[in-house]
Amino acid sequence: MLLAGMMMTSLAACGGSAAATTAAAADSKAESKAETAAEAAESKSEETKAADAGSASLPDASGDPQVTFQVTNTHAGAQIQDKTMDMLIELADKYSGGTIKGTKIEAGSLGGEREETEMIQLGTLECGLISDMGIDSAIGGLGWAWLPYMLTDYDQVDQYYINGWIGEELTKQMAAQGIVRVAATENAFRECGNVKKAIKSMDDINGMKIRVPETQAVQDFYTAIGAIPAAIATSETLAALEQGTVDGVDNSISNMDSMGVMERLKYITIMNYMYSGASIVTSEDFWNGMTEAQQACFKQAATEAGAYMRKEMRAATDKILEEGQKNGSFEVYEVEKGSDFYNALKEKAVALWDSYSKQYDASIIEKIKKDFSV
Image 1: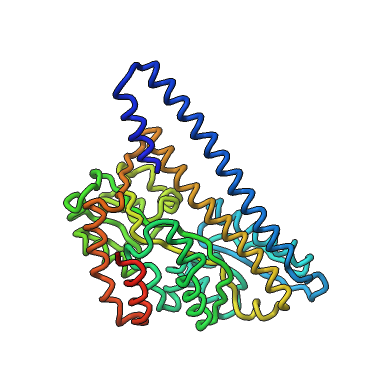
Image 2: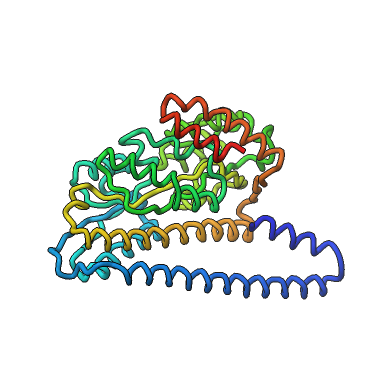
C-alpha cells in the first residue's frame, strides 16, 4: 500500500550514507516502476484477451430491428462515469452491428439516484449508472449488501460481489422490482477524513462529528464506535465542514475529491469498513425490447464498461492519496488488518449484524456471518 511504501522509504533513510540511500531509493523506484509497468501491461493484455474472447462469441445482431437507449448518472463532471457511459454506447453499437444506438443525458439533470431508479422502473429512462444505495433508496431491501466490515478488501469484492453470490442476489432482488441489473460498476470503499487529528484508535474517533449519508448502516456504525454521525446532503457537505458543523466526512476517496472536501481535510483514515457497489441497470421495457442477440451484445458492452470503471476508480483512489501526501495536503493512516484498532472496529461492526436480521432475509444474514465474521 502507499503508506507502507512511504514508511519503508523513511526507514531506509535512517541508516547509511545519504548517497547510498539516494542510490538505493533510485534503484528501488526504477525497479518499482518497471514492475508496475509490467503488471499494467500484463493486466491490460489479459483484459484485452477477455474482451476479445467475449465479443468473438457474440451472436450476429446486425440484422435485428434498431433499438435506442438513453443513459445517465448523477455525478456531474465526473470523468470516469462519463467515459464509462461513452464506452457503453460505443461498444453496444459496435457489438450489435449498429442496431443498438445510445445517447447520454447530462449527469444529474434528472435528479438524484432515487429519481433515476424510479424512472428505470417506470420505463421512462432506459439505462443508468446507479449505486446500490441509490437503488435501495427507491426499492428498499438491499442494505444487507453493505453491512459494515463485511467486505474489507478488493479481493473479497471481486470474489463475492463482482463474481459471486452477493452480486447474484442483488440481481434477483432488483429484477423483482422491475430493474434489470446488467453489470457491476463501482462506488469504492468508504473511508473517513477529518480536520482535527489522525484517527489511530477508538479514543481518537470518540465524540468526533462525522458527516454521513442517510444510510442506516453507516449511521449505526459510527454511533457504535463512539462518533457522532450527522446526515448531511452531498451538496451541503463542504459548507458544513468549513463552518465547523462537522469535524469529518465519510465517503469514498474519489467522491470526497469530487465533492471538493479533499482540499480541506487534513487527516485521512483508510478503514475500508464498507464497500459501496454500483451497477449498470436498464428498464424492463428496454431490455425486453431487444432480441436475444442484442441482449447478449448489450451485456458484453456493459460488462466491459463496468470493468473499465472499476479499474479507473481504484486507480483514481491511489492517485488522489499519493498526490495528497506528496504535496503535504493531508496525512494518511491505514488501519491494518489484525491490528488492535482493526479488531476493535470489526467487533463493533459485527455486533450490529444481528440487529438487521428482521429487516432482511435471515438466511442472507446467516450467510454473511458465515463468510465474513472471522
